[in-house]
Image (cartoon, rainbow, N blue to C red; front, side, top):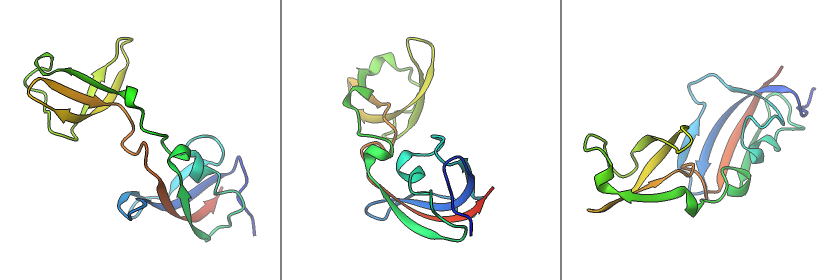
Length: 142
């Protein structure tokens, strides 16, 4: 039976959880995820677990944060005066906002903290700093 090797296009079903079992993403009820192994299309810790797998094989893959979305970077958090944010912008904790950088790029930030005078926005990936576990099933090797 064929085994996955770097450069193969594969399809997997997966469920991603935090180490406490909280599910953050799953292909359940959707088409399998398709990507090229070793191409950087998925997080490194999961990508490197695929070579050697065979179609139909299932495994649980622990992925430390450094092989997932990295450590949370304190420099990616910025506090700005609350009065600089237009009143129609929602400032609920956890709300995702799109902001424009000084170079004109658009980026997604999360409202991390709100006080009477400041709003702290966080540009870290929501899973930064978290160890993850993926339960995967190799569905196909193209």
